[in-house]
Image (cartoon, rainbow, N blue to C red):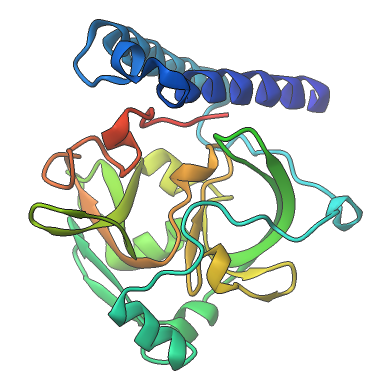
Length: 261
């Protein structure tokens, strides 16, 4: 079974990398244009993949975990490595002592949690493989609080469907101001036992380059789904209304919303 899982992960990762690399290889107009016929075909295929994976894997299927001896190198950073936003820099200068994680939206009890409060919650440590859409992978040990119990504290309303992660790092300057990274997952992945808000990496505090003070680990999806520098979590019933309304920063540029592997 383990051999099947690993082979399947390699196949799906390669497929996702191939599809996502089409825009980067000069085929953006043909394959990446949102609303175009090729892109529509890819999105229908992605929706089918999402449904099939849910049927085959179920909600609690675990991503492969590894032994410490299989950690061969430091965790390679993905995406932004040094946010220059003033509010983030002020927090980093104080070792994130003033950090608060806001949990809002479709919840009964909005939360505002310090990093110490999050660290004092029940923790999970897991050694997993990070698969990047660029084609590289890296095994590392992550420690953090499981997202599901934290959502239970907030009391998720029945109408909620998605968990939106709002981040500190500015990706570009838009017409309406800074465009900050954001990402989203459904409640099935949010409540998965391996989905954690990580504050530790390889036995030490999470470095800035890897997303300090908190990053999401969604172990059954590609790296761009694992938002770094998380500022707030918002429960919602729709992906509309943030960015391009497609559920994530890179999704607005044509990446699949469901980056399952």
